[in-house]
Image 1 (cartoon, rainbow, N blue to C red):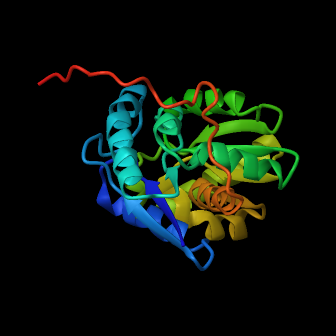
Image 2 (image 1 turned 120 degrees about the vertical axis):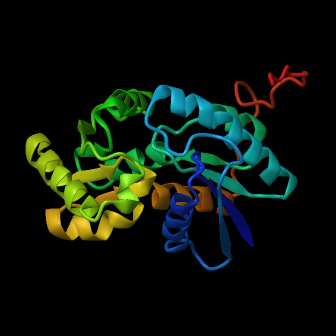
Length: 238
């Protein structure tokens, strides 16, 4: 039995539930998925500050998972917050949803467009495309200007995201769309049918990547940079 924790770096329980449903929809028999909401952090992640404030909660959750024998982890925010640090403290594989989504999209066409929430997050997505060696596949990054939490509450959310995807494909000449927010995870099928190209949800892609790595008996290398961090006492402000 494989146990995967899908860690939502924000503290909104409704989003954790939606993310967990997306992960459960794709895993194989014999794999158990648990959605995890951190004890601390922002209600949504829409800035560098939000992302930085989310990392302690993510790491605390992963340390708790290590105590409970979790086999692997998904970091379910498109900024992949705390990914490197998480790999230092987890025995099993840790995959970010932007990382997984971009690599998956590169298998499905010659180029993809990313459609994210707010325009201010475009720079972060571009940095990640460069980090993951995806610049030659990533033809454009577009914002639908819908706040993260509105994805669950705005009755027109699917329509707004779908139209942004259509415009992105037309503008970039892309073969694939990558959804740039975990909160969009359950929109894939509707958008793909409407726009006519494959649409990749990073939560599903990351969950299946973790499942595959665990099945192959592979773990993050501890030879160098991802070795466990040196033991030390950290000062905690109050």
